[in-house]
Amino acid sequence: MSTWIWPVRETMITLIRHGETAWNLEGRWQGHADVPLSDRGRIQARLLAVRLEAEGRQVDHLYASDLQRAWETALLIAPALKVPVQPLPAMREVHIGAWSGLTTPEIKERFGEDFWLAVQQGGKRGEHGESDHEFTTRIGSALVALAEKHRGERLVVVSHGAAIRIAVEHLTGPVDFQPEHIRNTSLTTLVFDGTAWQLCALNDHNHLNDLA
Image 1 (cartoon, rainbow, N blue to C red):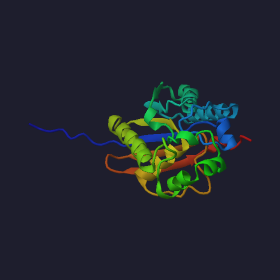
Image 2: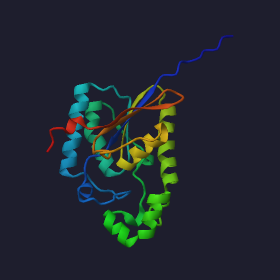
Image 3: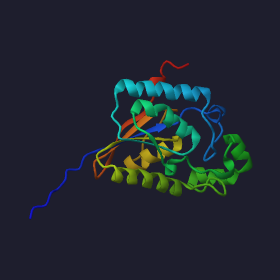
Image 4: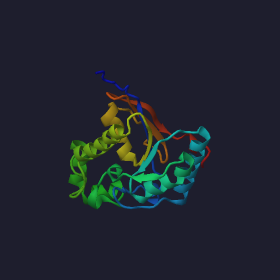
């Protein structure tokens, strides 16, 4: 009796940050607040859709955080990818509790000790928010589960800035994100070969080059 050993094919996951919101522009922390895209954010998503269609990207599945800024971004690019959007609540932004809607100076003023504990020691973001460990575990587990479920396939996941940063560092190791943060509608691509993760693209936002 012979045993077939199936070859392990690489799984590619492209992480896309949602389009811009009014709170992004105002420097307000969003967390799980369900903030919609701004008009500019919708333009960014449509420019991304044009790029994806022009590149003829082959995608097997499209997932998105269920927060509307990510979900609407996914809906706007879905026709270009020719796949439906599937909800993935585990890829929500970090939960920040009562910090939501505040600017950094406002958080420091109202929650100074908690803010510094979170920044310096990875503690909970606000009384009801997530710690670094909780956030990393949630995001890492979600992507590992996707890679196991869709081995050898090409996936797109529309998520959030902090979630994408955590995913990259947790799965591939420390990365220098300077001088820019993860831009709205940028593409970051990870490949899993069945054993290890590799970072293939980071914060690619070339489709926004002509957007004022």
